[in-house]
Picture 1 (cartoon, rainbow, N blue to C red):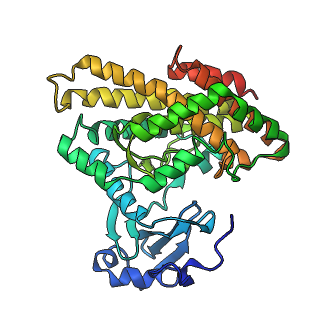
Picture 2 (tube, helix red, strand yellow):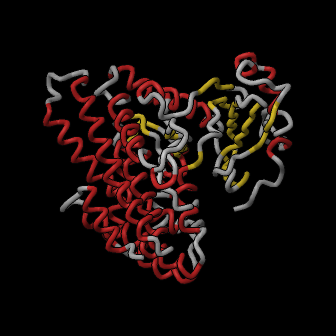
Picture 3 (cartoon, rainbow, N blue to C red):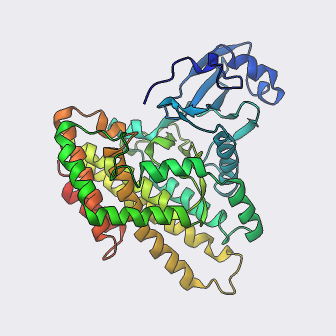
Length: 420
């Protein structure tokens, strides 16, 4: 793996104009639909803030506080460089999926202002007054209501973009237009396969090499990941987010320890470019996994209060998800054969599979490519134990998911392993 050899804005191999901090204002000014959103002659900030793995992200704000975000896809994975080429059409997918999600879950995703197909560039709502939830959790902050908002978001998407709430012909057309084979392949490889069959991208601390080896040698874990991969590849239930974790949630409002913030709390799911017609439980499991990783950070730091608060996010998200799904259930489009027993079966199915996907997400964040700051920013002497606990939780979860798949049982299991 190698980093990009040149600045993307001057890379002649990309084939279209790539923005820079210098050219972004000119671009906005040239687009009447964007120029009316802020004054490009009186800009206070123009900054490239893309700290993710894939894209360039620019924030432009004027002196009156109005702003626009420009997100541009490159022809390769930014984390790796040109050695990992990628189709930039993922920007179209993100714009389309975010708009669809906005229709069914208003206020829980950023507004999309425009999409430029010639430059693979999205113009969207500026969330500078929000912060990434993962960073807040890593600071030990506790923002109430975010887990519940994400539960409602996943439920709204599960109902509103599935045949339960969407005309079946329209839903099938949407599933086709958001087919996302390239980015799904990344998940299939990095999440479900490579932690167990190293493709040269895995890396752990020397002291955790034995833990990684035990993970790969755990036959029951590997078989469970095979099942999870199959479900991910074949269960097309709704247009899911596909990469929903604490790093893809922006938070504003409610302050540390639940203290009132500015009176306008907000939680938004961002970065839906991995979205596709997939299994609903994948988004739930991804959230759960990141809550448990955050809980292990708290335990490693000896902060039992933070650990317990993060563990409690698991049932909070599920309770909000279930309540929102049940609220929408009477609106299902075909009650002739979709009786109430189907709702119960779906909820049981999603709850059990969320354990499976959570286990997959926990393991890959410790062993595979693209780890989390929750664990990676810990001092090495305590990072070893935190990483080991996350892997133990993942391996235990796949064994316990059938007997009692309740969120409270997952919390009890994880809490018994993640001890301060």
